[in-house]
Structure formats: structure tokens, C-alpha cells
Length: 158
Length: 123
Image 1 (cartoon, rainbow over the protein chains, first blue to last red):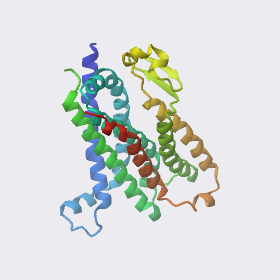
Image 2: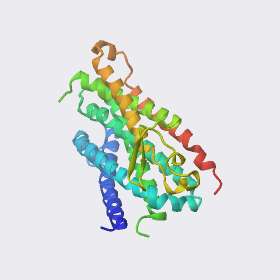
Image 3: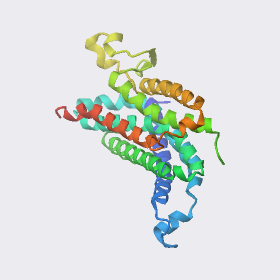
Image 4: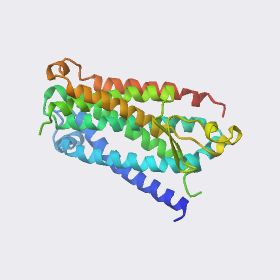
């Protein structure tokens, strides 16, 4: 199959899985931060009514799949996209992209601890759990936005 | 559902240690292996493009270190994680849980610092 088609299909699947991850991690983060006294039926009240821990395995799965697909797409990016951005002197975009890669790697290594925190009924780890979830949410949002913008500027198949 | 304390200690130590090792690997360019996607080539250790092809043709053989940095960090973090898992439970309880997110945040700031040169290049 044509190299460009493979890369384009991979980046679309990568983006779709990332959307699912974005939704799940945002939901869990907001419910972790939402006040326990949120009015039932309100926006945050409904967030809290969904058991946040139920998202954990799904988020780990989606994060891992997204990162794995991203690691494959990165090979195509390095050969087909990055040289064009370098020639266009879009250094700041390459900086943002590098940060995305760094953050994703750090987030990936935090997944086992994140899993333990959400499965651990100890009250002492609640704050750590919220902080860890927020950190992962930041990483996912950052990566999604940078990847999205970069793809809009110079995606595959052009 | 609870986890075995040893796994808990491993997971917590691994996550924090990975962040530290990753920044070190990035700062010192310590990649366990280097990937050359143009050639489908993987070489052990950190190799610069001009080590592989003529320096003037280095741009034809872009080297990728990200996979190698992550592997270096994973290796170091695994050792730290296994050591933490072997520690007695009372020792681990003395460690502040907040390090689990403070260290990665500090590492991310370290990554930002190391990436700053990209933003100072002339457009």
C-alpha cells in the first residue's frame, strides 16, 4: 500500500482514539475536582454521579493505544513532515511538538501509579490521585492541541 | 480491590524515577538506541547523523532519539522500581506521596527548559 495512505490512515485513527481519550480523561478530571456538595442535577452534580474510577482502565487502554499509534506515526512525521517545517523555519512548532513527545513519555510511565491510585481505597491518596489525573489530563490536552494544529499546518497526504 | 504493596511501591517509584531519568537522558542525549526511519535502521546507543553518513548528507538520514531516551529512562526507572518494591513497607510509608506528581511536573518543566532553544531560532 502507498506509504502516504498508510500514514494518513494511521494519523486519522490516532486522532480518533485521542478524541475518545480526551473525553474520558476530561470527564474523570472534572469529576475528581467537582465539589462533593455539587447540586444534584447540575452540570457538576451529574459529573459526580458517574463513578470516576470506572474510566480508569479505559483511559489507560486509550492512552497506551494513542501513544503506540503516535510512536508509529512519528516515524513518518520525521521523514515526511518535519523537513518541510524545518525548511519553512517553523522552529517554534517543532519545539511544541518535541514537548508533546516528552510529556507523553512521562505520562505513559505514570499510568501504573495512576491505576493504583484509582484502585486504592485509602483516603490519603485522594489528593495524589486528583493531581495525577489532572497532570495526565494536561498532557492529553496539550498533545491533542499541538498534534491537531501541526496536522492542520502540514499534514500527511499533501 | 487493593494491590499488593510491593506493586504499589514499584508503580509509584517507576513513575517518578522515569521522569527524572527521562530529563537526564534528554539533557545528556543518552539514547539506548537510535532510529533512522529513512533506512529502517536501529543502532544501539546514541549516534549522530554524521556518524552514519557523510556530514554534508546528514539531512538525508534524520536520526530519532525519542524512542532511545524513553528506553533509557524505562530501564533506569525499572531498576529504581524493583528496589522500591524490595524495600520494607514501613520505609516506603515515610515518603511523601506528593512526590509522585511533583517530580513529573518538575521534569516537564525541565523538558520545557531544554526545548527553549527551538523557540529562539530565527524564523
